Image (cartoon, rainbow, N blue to C red; front, top):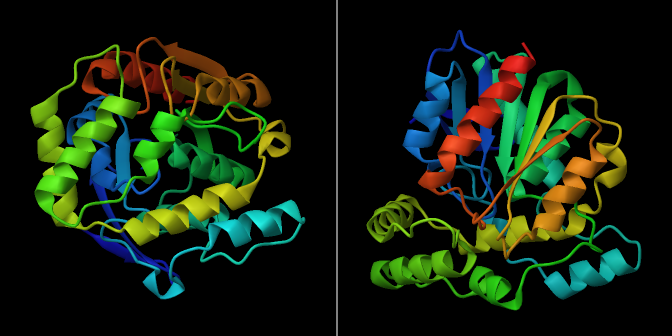
Length: 294
């Protein structure tokens, strides 16, 4: 797959569809490689008339790792934030948003539709706030505003998220299946073989547990985006699962409430993933948003 050197990081990326079509940039979540955007999902969006772009965020997959920064000291970061001080971080969500814009620059995309899932939703929010002229529409999936007063993850979901990553393939696959049952979508079929195959591909492509920790530090330190979101004027779609235990529905509701004119699509039975059975609702909704923006 192609790579781009932004001058700061190298990003691995892949495209689907005709470059002459409107660009749709997909941004994945915490510790997730770009292949978490299923090829079938990307191809379906391309079939709707989009030039689809997916990529590995920094510190995950085949993009630049920040291992020299070491593991973040979360208690120290939280203490600094509580004291109103700026914590010491390897990078911020704003840096990750700038990475995405640099990828658009490389591809010659002046303005793109942007869609992010979970942490990716936070990153696309930062893109819209920092680079509004580069964004045609925004879709935020199973994400939130950064307002810490909102309901947080269930203890079971947080335990799954922070459980140790086994160094062996069988252990990694079993962890992936177990976590999928905890944070996934209870209202849709659990496709075990499909999940096993994806987990094996993720394992062989390149894990970065330390990178996930550094990304988590960036999330924790970013703060509440609500005041900035209130000033956005771009067409926005917020998609959230009614059964999400990791980022509860209140996070999606708050995101939609903060952005003037935003549409909220709540999917019953959807948890913190984008299973194949939700695509018939999600893909037409995104396509309607992008088509409406011209």
